[in-house]
Every structure is written in C-alpha cells, then in structure tokens.
Figure 1 (spheres, rainbow over the protein chains, first blue to last red):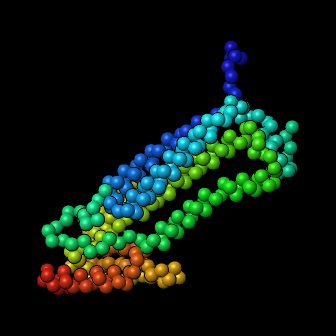
Figure 2 (cartoon, rainbow over the protein chains, first blue to last red):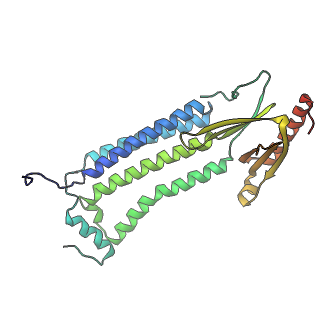
Figure 3 (cartoon, helix red, strand yellow):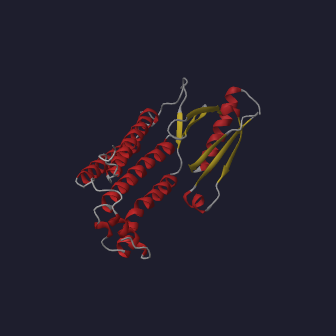
Length: 96
Length: 181
C-alpha cells in the first residue's frame, strides 16, 4: 500500500531551513528598526548605522537567495557519496 | 526618532546638559568580536579545502554548506544590530534638575527612571583597568538617601569630569530646594 510513497529526504530541507532563517532575520531586523526609530535619537550616527545595515542586509539576502536558487536541491540527503567526501577529511573512515 | 533635547516629562526651564553613552571603545570592542565571527567560515573553508582538496565540489555538500554559511551570516548580522540597539538605547541624560536613565535590555525590556539631583548624597568614580585608564572611561556611581540603591552610569567617557559636574549641579539643586543633607 505504501510502496508508491517516496520517503526520501532531499537537501532541499536545508534550503527551506535557510528561508526560515531569512524570515527570522527580517522579523528581528524590523523589530530592531522599530526600537531605533521609536526610542533612538535623531542623530547622524543612528541614521548611518541604520542605512549601512539596510544596504548590507538587502544585498546579502538578495545575493544569497539568487545564489542558492541556481543550485540543484533535489539530491538525496542520504547519498553516500558525500559521506565519503566528509570522512576523507579525517582519513580514517572510508564509506564505499 | 527623538529630538536630542527631548527628555521624558520635560519640565519648564529644564535644560539638557549631556547625554551619556558608553565610551566608543566599548562599541568598537563589540564590533571587533563580531568581525572575528565573520572570519570563521572562510578559515574553516580554507582548512578543509587544504586537507581534502575538491570536497566542496561535491554537489550535495556544497549547497548545504552554502545555505548554512548564509544563514550563519544573517544571524550574526541581526545579533550585531540587536547588540547595537541594546547599547545605543542605554543612554543616561543629565539635566539641570534630574539624572534620567533609559535602559534597554534585549528587544522587549525597556525601563526609564530618574533621580532628582538634590536627592543625591554621594557620587563615586570607578576607573579600573588598562583600557579604562588609557581611553579615560569608567563607571560613575550615584547614591541617594534611603533604600534606593542609586544608579551606576556604566563605561561613560571622562567619568571624573562627569562626577564633578553632577556634584556641582547637586549643590546648586540643593541650594535652590533649600534642603540639607
């Protein structure tokens, strides 16, 4: 009955986890900005920090999303070939 | 944003004399510690690539590590902003009548308190350590009568000058309120 279902886990899990981190990042950034605007002084330093952070943050999110979007996320997470690569780092355990 | 001359419940004829933030070296120290965190992924990458060349060409490892690395950088950035916000909003304001303390602890904990200058009984300076001596910053403890534990102005610039200013304002405030210690 369940033979037709595919339970294989792909590396796309990490892509979704990354998108969750992006959502958390945006949420916390907005909360911080709210505090800086609501309670911070109208000073050049405060404005410079907010502008520089916004520029770097937008660039990093855009760059990371465009970079990750070009990759193939359909590969199986339990593909043994990458385990072999990892274990070769230590040179003691070999996976065939 | 708040105007530089704005204070909570500002009184008539109340003048803002100084806003006291932690010394810039405190912010620079925090910034440097986060910059070290920024360097960690390239160092790990260089090390693994040196030990096992070509491991990052793997079509499973490379996307996963890239996603983890970007997530790491985003989290560091938002932590940096939170630390900046936390420290920048910790500002003590000295007026000719009051000492006002605004404290931000994390994202959702903000307290504002004040003390009348004429109630101040003791002002002490704590400036220990090499960095504090070189860059001339330290803590100023302001104590009042009664059970009130008083305030500590943490890591402010030129603490001796500030403590003298508070003492002078305290004398003036006491005279104008006709109080005795």
